[in-house]
Image 1 (cartoon, rainbow, N blue to C red):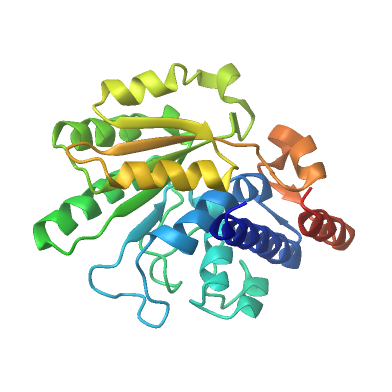
Image 2: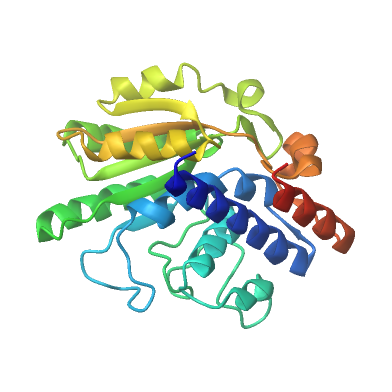
Length: 275
């Protein structure tokens, strides 16, 4: 296996461990949808994004907007792993005085470029950031992660329509397609299929890939960055709770679930063992 892919896999493993540590420190949280995006975060922060932890507001930096804001602990876990703040701070998650609220807040956390939590809004912000980058000619790529549940909201598609019709090609969007949301599967509640065809119809270049495979993600991002004239959508077919067996088994119940000290120990052993 390529050394770089091994490095990215190790980074994803560390991000998963950080997620478990952070959520276990408070005993409950959105662990399923955090674990499902660890791999894409590893690929972005480990290889593709341009940023400086010593200068979080660096001009021309690439930006990541996590529209599914309840996955804030995953974003924090990646930011801590690459040096935006000490990893020990992850254990202050959602506690009094923390810089790490349960949902992303750009006014509190170094490295967070957009406040999130009201689902459906993040893609609009990412489109705006991409337009701003074009106007300033700073060369930034804007990345956005949206959830499959929030993709049932109209604002997602309004933003998509604008990005596609205006050929905003410095925008790369990921759908965390774990096919589960708060109280059921997406198919049961409001089916998104045919999802790939929908994004193509909105004039996006589209990839549909295994979403927990860092090699596949790396390849798709590399290809997406080379496409001009269109925004890009990478559909990540993920497993909710990926990497921790009892979180995966909880399925819809992992949207927000308790994580005890014994759960923490078991999860960390599984992650280290590559479960």
